[in-house]
Length: 142
Image 1 (cartoon, helix red, strand yellow):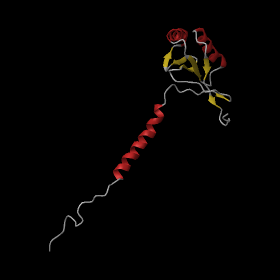
Image 2 (cartoon, rainbow, N blue to C red; image 1 turned 30 degrees about the vertical axis):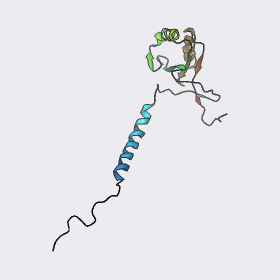
Image 3 (spheres, one colour; image 1 turned 180 degrees about the vertical axis):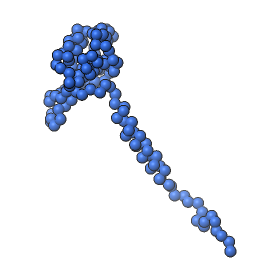
Image 4 (cartoon, helix red, strand yellow; image 1 turned 90 degrees about the vertical axis):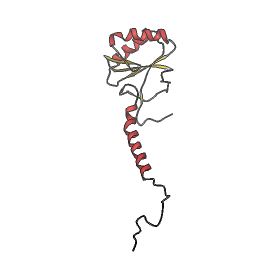
């Protein structure tokens, strides 16, 4: 009596999608973990406001100044010592006088601290200085 070792069906032409699904799930998990790390800019807790106006905030339209603490100021993601802020802004104004300035100030800063940064920005020559805020939770969109 002879044994049939190879089976009598021959080759199987069905597509096995299990490895494909495994790879897709691994890629999905990787993207879910990496995406929050891709957030650009300095992490600032912005103050809330009821009435806000959307402005262009990309680098081609505006210069972003992030004020995390009174001694920690970032201009276009580059940390600037507090005593050199006015000189840095004057240098930027000489290169790009037509740009607007958007100030992202942390909500724990006092009004006077933010006002000092705004005054120095105006002294550097920039006329259009705006504060960046978050829409108040629960407020209606017009």
